Length: 631
Ligand code: SF4
Ligand code: SF4
Image (cartoon, rainbow, N blue to C red; front, side, top):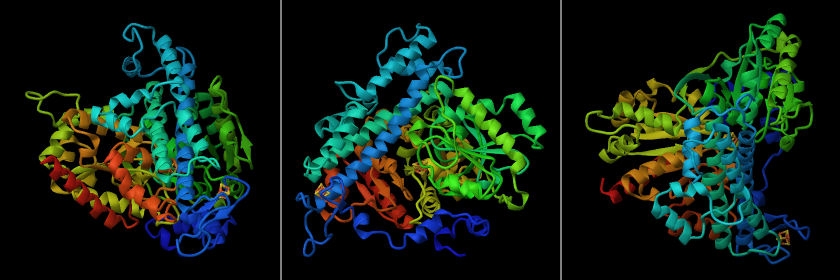
């Protein structure tokens, strides 16, 4: 077969051919079966939020149905659909965070959930105004902080605690524009209410509310998820890892961890070191137990343990098609419901673990925060006992893998920046060197490149092309999610990638001993990017919107990415989207997104599918910001 969307991915075609030979179906087969996707859906102009519908209206003001049965026009329908995507994305990130906070609530000295970063626990507790944070017993403080964090989801008054991190100017903008998020669940519920049949119909008001809801993700759920995961599982540090399907080891029991929640993954990492289980694996003829990560669970695990990354979103099927995965174990989000059926074409057992994401078709072992290790051990035992069922004739693991450096949390990035500080004249432990490099023009600016894969665009091409174009122009890139994994596979997370940079960035990388593309973690860890940008803005005494910094999601697909784009725009950063969201059916709504919102937040959404053109736009944007700053 030949698929023009996969030319950038050297191992995809061989594995898809193998799948066909093995009688296994992939997303490419399903995409082909769908034939042409619906133009009304694509434009966001179909509505099915009440059962008078479904209604679909014309994209053109001159012909066809102009209104749904209730009278909603294309602007209202597009706005409501967009808003509901923001709700979906926000709820996914935030519910994930709630589980982390619950795990912290169950943490104890002798239990499986422990506090590993006491310093960070005390820092965040003080930031949130808890008392006696220096002296209180660790777990008493952790439980108090967890309870306070749970209130962030449903407190009746006030706004999100982490908003106070932002520059004063930004907080004033959020207040002025009424987009400072209140309780997380409230924002989601209220927006679902607003977009119910017969409620809001004003597109401007719906977009504004979509921004506020998404803000409760970026500065609420996601930020809580990241910071609390660090407290319990450790602040990521610079470390070496490897990525791509070649990390699956045919001589070991392979466990693929897929999804998002570090709670399960951490327990599997602990249990996989259990000598009894290792002994069991050897008795079955395996050399050991090899845990590999996929998507954001993979990112969490590589950031904190260096666990190898098997691939990004689109490779979840490819990993099983290698025929060497004993167990694919998943928690929540971005898991193809197709996986159990695919697994049956091989010996792989597919195990879902979350009551929120019970996936039909194979095994379900519930993960319980009160007894987390038993689920993890059962998963590993299942994998070990499945090793003997492998069909050698179906095993074909591509040899491709790349070395990567991962682990750039805010704390670790600041540590790396200390390497360029003159210790005689300057202070360490701040983001000042980053500001200095940008202000001096050694770095022209920075880009946060995030998001998924999408079969509408060539796999990984837009991610890699955009990153390469930007680093060539001395723009440092920070990456998360499946974009980070694309960078890892392409070798951009190695020190040697400095050779692809312009002179300034190359020198900065040499001095700080970092790659030009920094892996900052999973999708919730985009909050790390917000935090870093905020620290720089505060240090320079400017607003976030004044910084020569942009966000980009070249190949996104999920509602979470729509929420992310919306909170990044709300935070003051122009956000470049490589895939069109479902808004093209309303010129007015598109105009609000690309122009109108700029008047509220100082930033806007930019739609550009060609990554080379996107890079040109980003460079012009960055240079424009520099000129305005007078640097
Ligand atoms: S809310 Fe209006 S446009 Fe939507 S399905 Fe019902 S009648 Fe149709
Ligand atoms: S980047 Fe997208 S596909 Fe990848 S894990 Fe995050 S939301 Fe899922």
